[in-house]
Image 1 (tube, one colour):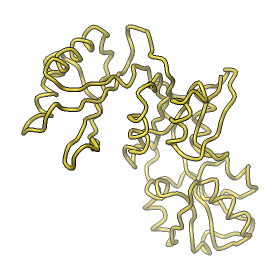
Image 2: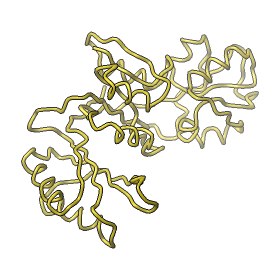
Image 3: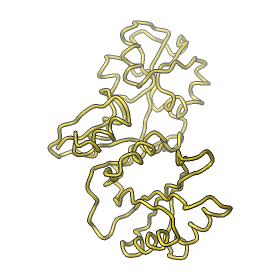
Image 4: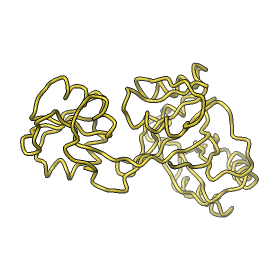
Length: 274
């Protein structure tokens, strides 16, 4: 089985992929971007893909949602919650007090904003935390540091100057696992679907939500994304939880379709954490 994830080596996406598929016979394929991960699944180059969907502090990763919506044959089959612990990584003989710059990616800077402010360092953006750590090592400088997973210290022979520099200790990222096959189990913890209203009018979202409320379907997550048809028109991504049964979910889909709304099931799945 081939599984795609966002590289390079040492990223949180790699850690999530290895943990989720632990014990399975897997050939991992590193991709350069999230759209490439989902594209690899949709174009049959891999069997499954895993990508970050949401961070507790950063919020929704729109690139993942938008890419998923582009491939109608790609479905969510699982969810994985990864605790995110960030570390300050530097070359030997670097002192915390001498650091002038920290190198990483914008989401990591967001998750450690208060710490960086206390450090008094300038943020320098890279395309991945692994690239930032690699460049810190290559530079040999003792006035810069990278922020990222602890694994990067081992990969690039860096020292961990300080651990758990994230602003919130319960920080975690939600990953989705995708394939081209729908989960057949009648009972799943969650379901996600996208609804494109048949027309824009005041209260259209409220009317849609009332249907789920009437059927006692609990919605735990709601996002809106542009339809790309006309400025100011949106579609809604909804996620249900609390073990919504298959029959009730199908009833909601039937009602919404009868009312003229376009609805597409993005997947039914269970959540896993390791």
